[in-house]
Amino acid sequence: MMKRGFTMIATLITVVIILILMVVLMKGEGLGGDTVDMRKDGLGKTTMGSAILSAKDTVCQTNLGQVRQALEAARMSSTDGPPQSITDAGLPQTDYVCPVGGEPYVYDPASGKVHCPHPGHEKF
Image (cartoon, rainbow, N blue to C red):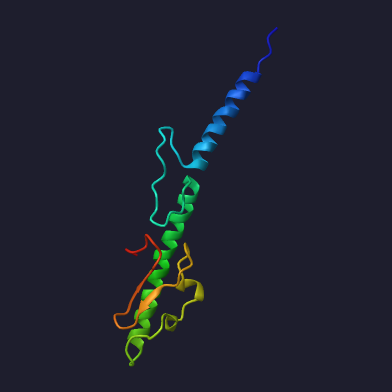
């Protein structure tokens, strides 16, 4: 009488398949040897690391948008002209630095423009 169920061979094959998938995810390479798109800052070399940094890039874009809106509101409510410092926007201190690299945002009071100095964030 034959027993039904997993054999040792089927279990080993399953374990090997799972290990191959883990290596592909952790290393960031596909089966053809192609790697994850490289970032300008050189970070995020694995698939999961790239996804995390992509989310932080979105947070940086959102922070810059909020800082710009707050500075514009401060400029409109003041008769003295544009704010002289980025902290005059009145936002929490965490909104004035890039979440990826930790660099403080650069503010030019003459033009009223704010940008992120982190590599790859030039278009934010």
